[in-house]
Image 1 (spheres, rainbow, N blue to C red):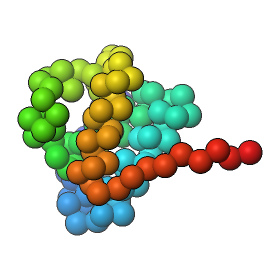
Image 2 (image 1 turned 45 degrees about the vertical axis):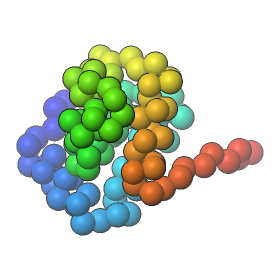
Image 3 (image 1 turned 180 degrees about the horizontal axis):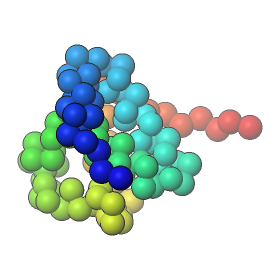
Length: 105
């Protein structure tokens, strides 16, 4: 189901002022990918990008066409791991965070 414009604006407004919220969006996207829920992971990562850097700037900074990034993270997108991890690494660096994975038993 597509998000309403109001919800997208609300996410953007909160992300602009709340660092913890931005970090939580990025972490949630990564946790979704790691748990096998790629569709939700792509949706949350799209929300994060739209609320922060935007696809145009991300494309300029990563050297990838913005439309390609949008398709990659779109509902029917199937990103290669290399491309997805490059984008995630760039977003972590830009945000000033480093997500680590620890084995839980």
